[in-house]
Image 1 (tube, one colour):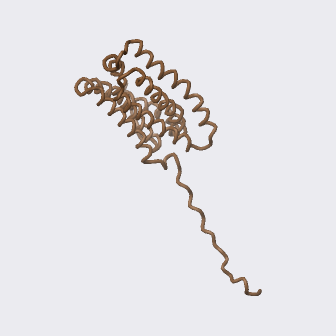
Image 2 (cartoon, rainbow, N blue to C red):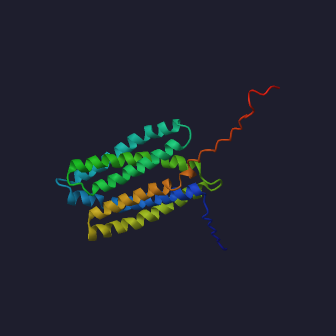
Image 3 (spheres, rainbow, N blue to C red):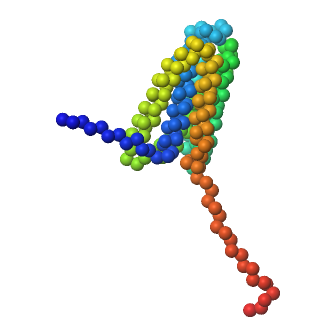
Length: 218
């Protein structure tokens, strides 16, 4: 019995670019996440294992609390313009938080940038799936989601290994800077093709004016 596996990787343009953006985002934070707790213990003054747990709690609690009202707000707005702008804003905030971690030396600085980290990803969680799900390819919904999961999984796995290598050989700051750059690239990928989500304004129809002189009798 022969088992034939025939995979068709053709997807719609919106799906393709959103997967590329997701891939860049997870590549960036894939560099950061595996070494983040080691960074806290080794480089943040006065940090303990409790500090690591506190930083994680700040991120997850704030992200979880913020993304619900953000999603509710976006759902009440018609069209995708607000979703798109929220997504771009979230990616840039997440990028800035990664850059900020490169300068963290104290606990208050760590917690401060974790707040921005959580806000950025709350905006991302409320907006990215909303746009992506509206543009899924007909009859290929499962494949589109699986393709995104596979792409970001491979990306995060490879960058997780590289993050450890880079941190060991070049320092944590390089890891955070690269994480911020990849996150910014994620936003730039979407900004390069805004017409995919935001259709260009329609050209107004020309108005034909009556130029008949008013002083001509009929």
